[in-house]
Length: 309
Length: 265
Ligand SMILES: Nc1ncnc2c1ncn2[C@@H]1O[C@H](COP(=O)(O)OP(=O)(O)OP(=O)(O)O)[C@@H](O)[C@H]1O
Ligand SMILES: [Mg+2]
Image (cartoon, rainbow over all chains, first blue to last red; front, side):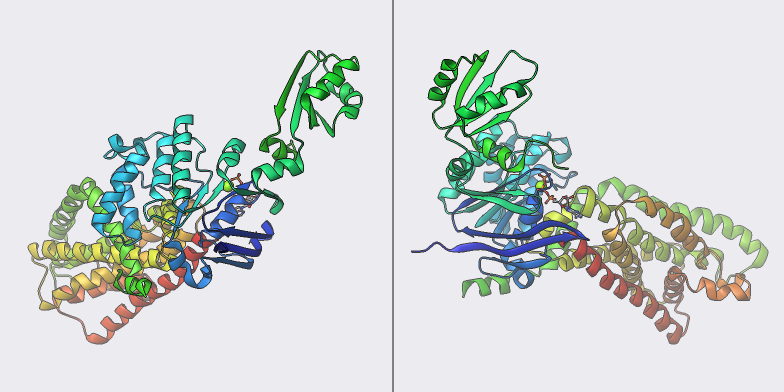
């Protein structure tokens, strides 16, 4: 059995005036997948997510969601989507409970169903005690949790989350991860952007890295690490003001050497072996650390360490 | 064909937006209710009775009415205009820019048109009941003299929508509220004062009278007076209605474009 394509985008372009925010990307997402978008600020992630939410219209290219065209079937698509936008958009003057109930009415859910789901979602967002408080009085993280809960009111088949955990404390983050795993097991497709690499590694089956409107890499987190980084990284510190002087001396020992202000990174396959070789060559770092390569290494390698704009 | 059945049974999408506004209002109306009941009584007591005393002593009747009876109906027109103004600028800019609740709605099955129509339909609903209340208040002061007064709730609704539709359209495209105060200062307040609201258009020099007729509120005031007294011939009334309907219709067409652009860009 082949998996069902739920999102298929071809040569997707989004322009704002003459500025091209998304420059012709191709994306295909299957039902049940959890798919991530990574990329530095301004890469075009939100612009892409808004097109996949059947809200914003592509300037060029095509996108189908559930095989439907957002230009003609927007309402039918959005009925089956849950969207957690990057910015909260809650009714600040109203209570937490009413925010959820009123949103349920947008989906024309029967009152009784809404009430049941609201109780469930309040529990999920751990806001049951605050149910009757004005949203304005909640903390930033609580508002975020409420926005996420609101996106689940229609039991969506695809859940689109734009930086869902920004502003959440570690407990709330882990709670959300648990809930997302559960949704995924139930067959919900997840589309996520995040700036937390550990989160992407944990949650995503597959992800793309975007940079300045284009996709620069695509694959499973492990595959990307294998392709764009080495298995291990050796981090060395020396008692010196300028780590640059070690660049040439260390390059024979590694596939790639990167010099940072306070340390030198060696991208290698066997960290401990490399370390022994370095010691044998008479180079003595003041401290040394061997670790596995992470998605963060890939991300920084692909998009650069400096701010691009 | 379960999905088809379901969408046939489901309520019209704009109605869900109407319902949202109604629910919101049900939660928040209490703050303003005392002021909005007290205002017309204070207004008519001070201007109608007080100034009316002077006018009566000076010039006698105004267009066949006592001064109180002359200005009382115009209060319905100015109030429904103000309802359209106050609910269509800041609240709309907040919804598309500051708190972004229209963006949240646009991520549900609602289309921008549904959001627009639901908003205007809700304001029309409020205007209808406001106009009923003001008809009763005007009647308390004795200025209702004809069964044509039964059309007043509809006229009030038309006035509100005629103002709110273009203003919602304008606010949907606005980047900041800087221009809103200017609109009040240079458009709404002069219109409130000079639309033959407090004295008949015959008080103006002949050359200025056509200018007054450019004010949309002038047409609302004229309609409301005709309905309250049962005076005026059909032709001019239809012309007044046509002006207000044209404003409402062009506002809706304009708003469809600006709100859609705002929410789907
Ligand atoms: N409505 C708009 N009008 C003009 N430019 C826009 C608009 N929305 C986004 N942009 C521009 O498009 C580019 C991509 O923005 P986008 O919000 O998609 O980035 P992002 O990857 O989500 O960034 P972040 O990580 O900061 O959320 C940015 O340069 C932004 O300034
Ligand atoms: Mg973004």
